[in-house]
Image (cartoon, rainbow, N blue to C red; front, top):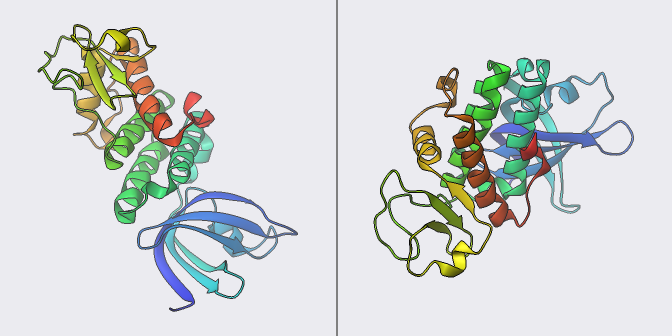
Length: 250
């Protein structure tokens, strides 16, 4: 196996790693999640290029004896400096990166994972403060869909009966799907603290599957429906991860 790897990649995280070096986590379209060391001080060109939310082509050297990786070059294609110019953009971008890292890059189909992350970051780079939360929700819901976790809204996961658009559903982690309020087998479920998904919430989430994040400016459901939609998306992803990420809560 070659010790040298070249791939399209997005920098997700960077942190100090002894002396003046840094450690970076990348999502590669052909290689998945990679951790590599960037050697050089604060004035290093490579160190400035390999910053969070930058994407381009990465060259990585793998030492099979020590099982370590070194980033030897990074040709930036998208810098996205605008993300750091606004608090809401930076917080949403960090939530995107943390979600990818916590779910191990999706576990496969790296090119799709990279597409979703980059689409969200590209939209955030030009978004106003009010739209950033909507872009993050777009990513979380599309990520849940990508992982195969998105529940169906057309029928009850317990009784299997079709549900109308006006029906209020609740997400059952035990069933991994939505249950209706009148389900004959849902007595135990009704006693649990389940995330509610009303008509407005479900309509918005279905809309997000059809829209690109760049088209979300000026579009949003009512505040209650938005809160339900975010609660549902984070409940599903949190159940898969076994925890809720603090970056989702801003």
